[in-house]
Image (cartoon, rainbow, N blue to C red; front, side, top):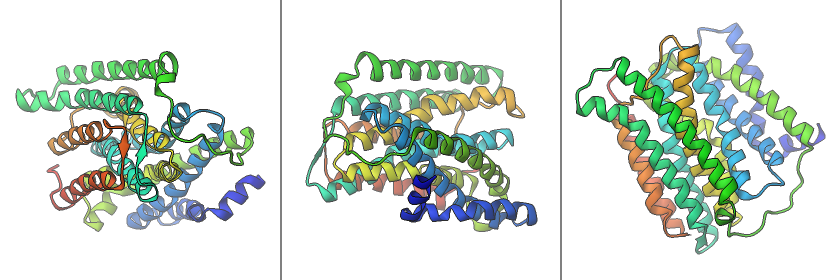
Length: 363
């Protein structure tokens, strides 16, 4: 417990943990104050995600960058998964899809661009394993194509949404999860040596005891679930009062809040010249959202959702996800990075954010 208290004292982001009991109490005493509950839940999710990331780092301390990046991406995505699960259960499929698309774009553009910018400002030129980066970018592109097919087919061929499209979504969900599993076998098994990091060795830092790390992971997961329920219940009314569309909230706000801890880890790694780890977290998280979380939500909708959810996205999300995948693929193909590369990636993300804010999609 001493390790946890020390971490809270030295990390200002964790001071926001005070918002967790506040939002839980406010939900009981002021259930109709949706805007207040929305803002408090956002403030509460950020430190919970940071604590989740810190516990993940402790568990992954003795692994290499490949497994460490996978663990950070997996447990870092837990926040987005819990929020999506709560929205799925409430039947807010527009929020689920917006958060999925936003997580893919945010991780592959904002997180990747930010890591390259911060690392490039500290080091003149950074290098990374181009084979590993190309693999992640290739998986992201393939997954994005599969996610876009139902939307493109229904729009191009004017096929009405119905059982056939839903069956296609379910089949694609199973295919994507299978592809994700095979990708893990490839990157962590048969070709692990080819995908190893080429940067400096991991620094030896004080890590938490394993029991404490697992306990924190379990406790934070429960708290994230409770706060996410409040967030989802208040997001629609709060968004309307703040002048934000559901698409903007899911695509930008939920994605940034959910990925806050992963971003901290990726940015820190890049500033220690461990760009391989930063890229592994950024693109690995985007790939996991596209290949695992999105299809999982489709399959879970048959069990916990009011009706089955398909993989049809609004046209703007289709375009943004495809551009994000192509940008990540193009800018990670050289094996070298500078701060200006990060700026260019961030500019693309800013274009998407401004577009969604000023021209929200039609419901």
